[in-house]
Length: 159
Image 1 (tube, one colour):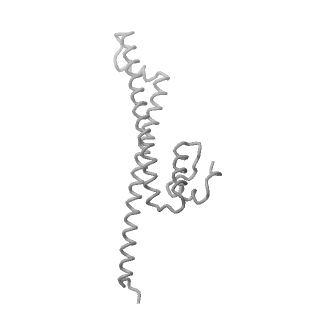
Image 2: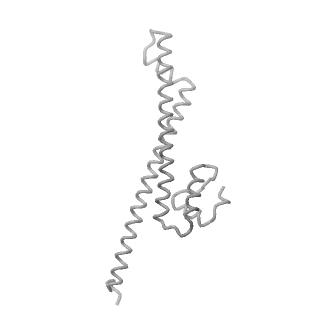
Image 3: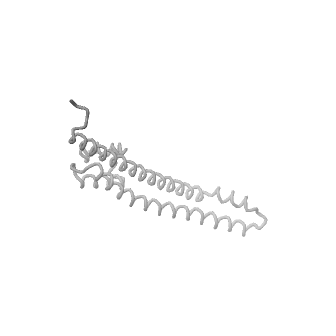
């Protein structure tokens, strides 16, 4: 769904690894809107900081989703094991756990939990990547300032 995204903005999105933005994906739409709002005159640093805000909020939501999915799975497992042990007091805890794991709801809840965990981890890693990118950007700018000052001072090796 890239038909609505200008080519110059697509280039910026590719720079952050979003090669196939889909405006139906809320995070993609949010990032596109942020970059569109910043406009073509935005510096790389301005874009990175704005993206950190977008991804920060998204990471917070991913963390909430992860925590809820984990709690739902653990609660289901505890309830199911308890129910099985009450129904058959001779059943071992290990067997009750194995039976609980075999439940279709346990599979569904565990999958949701694992996917939510991966999303949260990916968001955290992307935020770290943005931080590193911003550090590199700052270093590049500092290097350019030093080179500009050296040039202005006549230092540069050009005769």
